[in-house]
Length: 98
Length: 200
Image 1 (cartoon, rainbow over the protein chains, first blue to last red):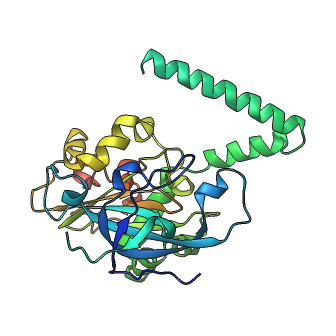
Image 2 (image 1 turned 90 degrees about the horizontal axis):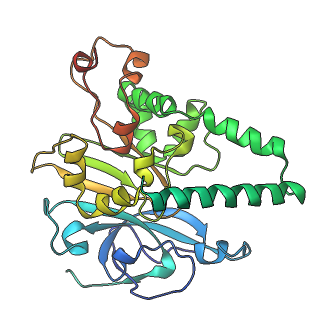
């Protein structure tokens, strides 16, 4: 699978609710960040958790978020960041500079 | 530990035992394989991570490869990492890194052994991402306002190791001596590596 996003691109984490096992923390859903690096291809945790190993591998990214984007009342420096690993099917492109 | 937590731990222990006995009974794993796995984990200690850090302090080429591809570089030292996908993040005078796993307790066990209990606590996991500076201050690490804090949440397949700064006044030390200064907490990012005069 060719990665859909490149390092430096702005992305938004999908703000959706899914039942069952996921590895996308609730606090980061809907937040915007920048792709820091492509980590390689891995199986979806949503499938692995239920013993399904046959699924395709998909790109995993490290996405860097400004802390003040994640927590509007964040106490700390404006430059402080939070890096989170997100699978491609949880990301969409965004132009929003916020 | 609260009573509720203690009860939860007891349940987890019973569940683990029941599950393991079933797997052995059905021939999926053997008792010997389980014992070998446990024994292997006990060979993993923070001394392995400390060796990696000290090598990076002494060998700029190794450091560059370590930051580029952590797993491959650690393999150069003959340390067995199995399926570890290691990302090494470097502290500088302007930047401090902190590792957490908000969803469970992901940790670079191949290099640091089992995580400390506080690393797995709900309190550390929820506060490290929300108010890292306050958490670090409680560990005794007061960062200047001008220093950037970068928190890494190991949510998926990567595992993280902080490359701490080499303390001053260690020029006369050998690589092996420097490795002895590197603590587990410094490689998680909740401490600095103390200079020799503070250790002695």
